[in-house]
Length: 179
Image (cartoon, rainbow, N blue to C red; front, side, top):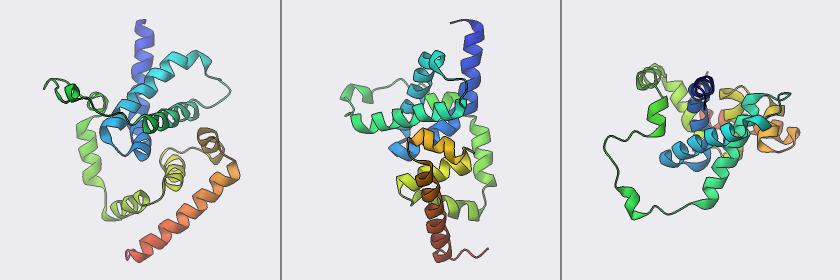
């Protein structure tokens, strides 16, 4: 791998790792598995980058790979071999090498009570609603791009988003949130 290719991969990891990790975590609901699947997503992306259709948006293609990787991980649900419990203390997890802990802590401290309330409400949504809300509101994907990632009809995606917003509104009202 050339220096230029290494720099390109580093840039892609810096740009997308955080978002991919939380997207994948929404599927697998396990931090270690989300880290592994995030790393697997970058490996698959890098191996197949020459197949990328440049008429499409890169982010959409990358999130499609992430979704498939997360679903594959859920299908495997491998048992953890006993030998895997032993690890070097110096070993860093994949996500620790790409996430700036100071930025993460600053983000946590800056969150307001309403953001936490909304986050908890989003977490209670079923996967199909939570995924659409995350991709549209957090990642800025259009409904057409989300339909490509999830391989579903655009009208279904729009409907899920509308339903999710309605569910969230009701949950927030029940929790006593009054805008």
